[in-house]
View 1 (cartoon, rainbow, N blue to C red):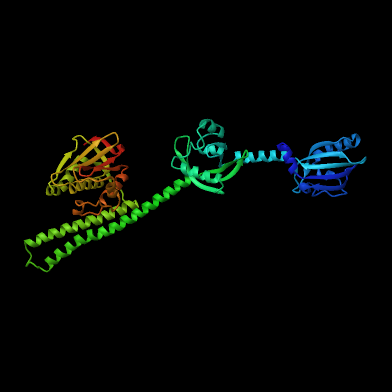
View 2 (cartoon, rainbow, N blue to C red):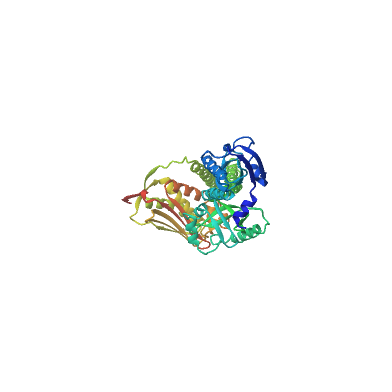
Length: 486
């Protein structure tokens, strides 16, 4: 028995006896045949069950059977309970001189082929990638799966992969999981599988996809049927959310550390101010004299430091709020450098740090906010002097390059690791080292410098090696260079 015979054997049959006018005299059924004659009524005409376009054929064949006595089988469209018509095989045989026996059976082969064609259209037109495979072989893919990995069609994908195997485009790190899930699915250990993995795209990169897979029969053999969905956008969103969460947690930790540090930074100059002013107020060392002048200088120094801390906090607040306006002019960097070196010269002398001025004579003017440029240069120089041990050097240099106008300070100080550089560039971050802890500071200097440079369209870079030194560079865009020489 072939496949077609098996299909006919499983299908139910119905039998009608009609007279020469097409009136149903008797009706009977076998197996599933009842569904074929649900609306047949004895005593009524059979024509109401036949598609109008097939009625003439049926009448012609019925008349021929009555005249010739020979059986005939035709394919017509027979009405179903839903009101639709389905392909039906009808055999007409002579029952008596005036009656015909009509045997009806569904044309299951035609129905199956139609269903197959409809399903193929659904699968081929699906926006989800569909793949049927075994542990080692791809049995079928649709065009949507090919699109996921950068190919125009399933045929192009198959040609490109050749005999490379079913796992050739799976990320190596995901392959063990894929093999295990397919093994379990084929063994019936998993009814439905759902998981994420990475597929290699035609461009060489990998894309995240999600699959829902079930065990299926394909050409009589067990196989894995998977629906694949591109989740690259979702993965990117998850990554962005994780980064935002990490950044928020880092900012929260940093501000907590800042508050702990700031309580010390603010308390130290305030204690000095209160202590020395109390000595003067109460004339603890007798009437006002030279000793009180020294205390007054200490009060002034502590007050100045406290003002610097408050100014740093206010500057950062304005920068973060976008409310700090630039007051631009043509800045003579060479002249500005001389003033900055004078301000840090005493500190450098106290720490036995040599200052080197490496500013070319003929340097173009810079269109910028002079106060901001000065603040950046002073911060660079102060850090270099502060964190360079005795006998070290700190050099300030300015150059016009293809990238822009750069101002750099190079020192031979304690240096930093890449992790410490990240901390130093973060708001309120303070590098934790023995030498760093000897000096006061808010940890706001470099973040403020970076923000000021970004307001100018520039950038801040820091390169450093522990126990070798640090180079801090402020880069202004070429659009801010004034052609007139300094």
